[in-house]
Image 1 (spheres, rainbow, N blue to C red):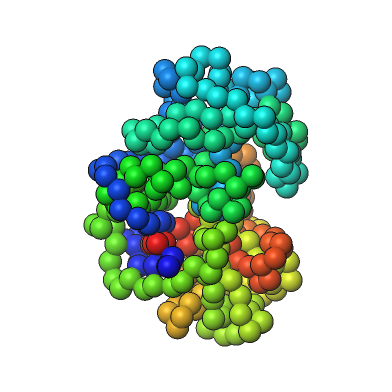
Image 2 (image 1 turned 120 degrees about the horizontal axis):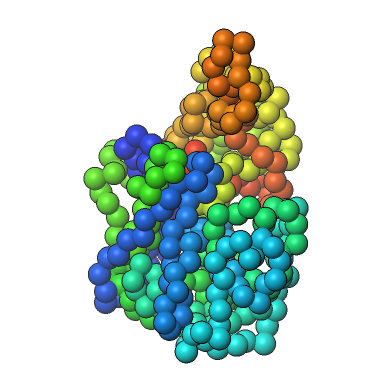
Amino acid sequence: MKNQHFGKMNSHFKSFIQTAKTGTSTTASISLTNIKNSQYTGQISIGDPQNVFSVIYDTGSANVWINSKICKDQGCKKRKQYDHDRSENYERENLHLDVEFGTGELKGEFSQDTFYFGGIQIDKQDFIEIGEEIGMVFQDQQFDGIIGLAFPSMAAYNKNSIFDNIIQQKKLNKNILSFYMSKNQGRNDSQLTIGGIDKSKVFGQVNYHKVLKDYYWIFKADNILLGGKDVGLCDKVCYLIADTGTSLITAPEQKAFTLLELINVNEDCSNKYQINNLDLTFIVDGHKYSLTPQEYIIEEKLTQGYTFAGTQKTICQLGVMPLDIPNDEDGFQYEQAWICKYMEIVK
């Protein structure tokens, strides 16, 4: 049985942990760099000889995408590119994939190679060499790939994620992944730990919640309250999805517009102190997990523009985006606002 566990983190930190069978190796860790509180990137090595890439470790997707030499687009050329001709362990697969990402599109071909995940060797890992990037969204990215950590049933052709291959290849004594995410922008003090957790970052009770199916890391919420009141965000039941790869809470379109209307933070931040009592509370199996307005409102200082008082101009926006997830009615994806407060364990 797979379960979701929550325990409160020390201020500004959170872990996402996945557990499974017993293995044979020790723990390892990967430093993660906080990019504007919206992306956390870490390193992974690929090939023989090894080549190091900067990637996003994403529990909200399942495919492994790596920027490749076969891509001739300008965005690809700005970042590090995998060259399969330089790896002795590379194997070609006769499979292709074309995926839309909001306003962009990725095309690529499947390959196999040896991956080194925090120094742990993973043989014959399937991944997609990015062959074409369509759309401006990819032009200024600061990472070379995406490592999906959701279930194989979500992946194209049911390919195993890196974590599933670690389990099958019996690489760890405890098959655990834990994310430790800091609010310190531009710093690499965040961390992904493989095979364990840093218990010094956790305090309070740990609660257990069942994962509903092997697809997303998804579980059921009893209700979602705003300011302690039921405002219709859950119709009988709704679902929460763990996603370390997104910077916003996503909600079904109608529910997102309800939140935007009820919270209504001004862009100039002039009313941010007037909504201090509007905690967003997720109730799961009777346990309450709350985010304060300071935790779910994004406050950003502009690089250009100043107030009449001569101070740097700041804008505020609600960290919620409408997104209807197919086949998951009332599915909310929670992100780094939650990730910086609560610890999660999945087994």
